[in-house]
Image (tube, rainbow, N blue to C red; front, side):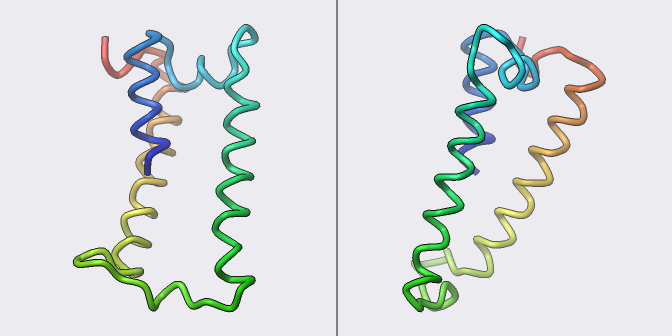
Length: 94
């Protein structure tokens, strides 16, 4: 979820679209993206390896089920952003 927010922040700060940020040869955005994905995957697996159930933790309205659905919707939104950027190649925030 934070990745989507930072994609918009970086787009506003640099003026580059998300695709340009990832595949610009002068910037190493793709390397950082792949590294962040690997780090988050490993961090997500640690509770599972320790035998903890991810569905037992909750904090107010933030239950495992609501967080799972929020994450899925954000993934769809980010995928939609990438697809739109492939065709229009303009920043969301001008």
